Image (tube, rainbow, N blue to C red; front, side):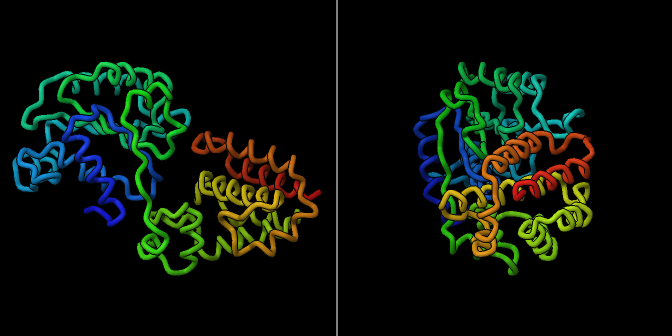
Length: 316
């Protein structure tokens, strides 16, 4: 099923495929934007043996096999969990398997289709291995690469792909699809207008987080570290929240508009006289580094306490 804002994107990409304008497609959109639905529709069209203009028929053998996750000309590559960092990562050995698939003959469709749903799972070695086959793609083989952020994709890979930025829904379209009623507009802003998100904090936790950050005393900060357990909530959730909070603080300090916490504008303004911008930038760097290792088996509680203490020091 396509959403209304995806229809023009789908038509453009399906037509480009019909005209053989690419062998590798790199689409980018946020992780909560619904891009998987569009890609799946496109895959179905590419593999269909009896397409109806720019759409799959839905009834041929190829369409049925794809629906049953049993199509022999369809390959999806996702990362294996890395034992050191406990995050999914695509390894060179997996790319070798992809290359083997790409070089064999197709079985029932006119094309083989290979999808990498998360380009962020590539490491440098596996990305370079992928580049080699993108430089000389086998005939009748199409790659669909999905990225949340094009800046995370190697320039050499981007140069070999047909790049396409997918559309986002309008604010009203997105708001109608948000899965919650309370704080719906806040969370939609938090996820950059992408409606298919899972709420990371309860209403109580959200209020507690914001209240403690607005009153950054030692007592409030360490009470927060006890009440919000990184092990239960996930260090990634806490780090992302703090990064967005700091981003809005920096914006306000520099007389720019708030992006995420507009409802707190007045309260945030009271923090400005004491806020040390240089310390804030240093803390942002610490959080960015920590975000890369959020799944590592570190002492997350100790890390969270350390970050909160540094936050409190922004106002000293």
